[in-house]
Amino acid sequence: MAAVIEADDRVSSVHIDGLAMLKIVKHCQESLPQMVTGSLLGLQVDGGVLEVTHAFPFPEPRGDKSDLVVKTGEEANVDDEAAALDGHEFQLEMMKMLREVNVDNNCVGWYQSMYLGSYSTTSLLDTQLSYQSELSPNAVVVLYDPMQTSHGNLMLKCYRLTQEAVDIKKNGKNVFLDPKRIFEEIPVVLTNPGLVRALLSDMDDGRRAAAGEGDTAFDRLDLSTNPYLEKHLSFLSSWVDDLSAEQYKFQSYTRNLARGGGGGGDRRDKRRNRPDSKELQEGWANAEAPKRMESLLISNQIRTYCDQVDKFSGGGFSKLFLAGGLHKEGKASS
Image (cartoon, rainbow, N blue to C red):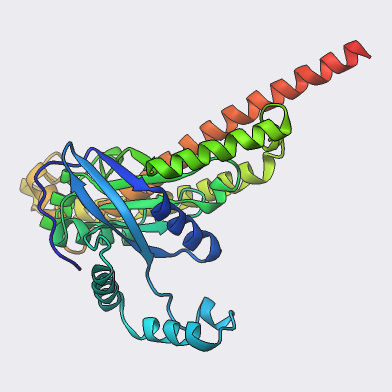
């Protein structure tokens, strides 16, 4: 991937530069409905802080969205050259060019867009495992949700695999792990240089002075919560169906394992017809056994959806009660 980062201290927070964040948002927003990925560049500083100072997207596969967008001249040539390289070669070539212009070229992780909080998948787990194993234990993945952000809430999450999940995947063990302990969320802080903060302060003061009053953005009072909540519940139902299918695989394999452990003849009583703990462990270590990590990831995603529905419903009820109070007050005054 890139130069290996020495992991002196474990990262406890991630600071993302405002310009790097805008690049991530622009890439994910313009690529909808396709989910895209990119690389994060930066440095690890003292105090367990990982600074992300630059980001660039990975090239899109040919034949997808690039066929729908008509490009001419140098832009089309650059896209063709980028598509000709695979992800690893493109990343190395891009970092080499950034080093020539004195930009941080240390890869510290990657980013990916997600749709309504869907991230707990096997592909993301395997990719993050390769980053933490081959690049640095402090490598992170930044997840950005453009759909939830369009509803007024900046949905930006940063995760890494816990040490327990890394050990289980490396050793190839088929054991149980609490779904909450697969991914570890790291706090994200957006930072800007002093000049940028001063400019934003001046622009904000000028807008308020020109308006002559406070903030008049009433988008947050929008009461149309049904489509957003229905989509969440639809996704939640599909993930529950997937979990039910995984549980059926476990039940079928357990029944087959119990039948196989009961072949001791008449000398074994009914109690001995059941396999002991050692036989069960050997059975679940078999290559034909269903992988528990798949069901654990589904359980983690269901928990994420439940948390989002709970958070969104709480805000929706608050707006409904507020609108109801204003409506009653308007009737009383009239």
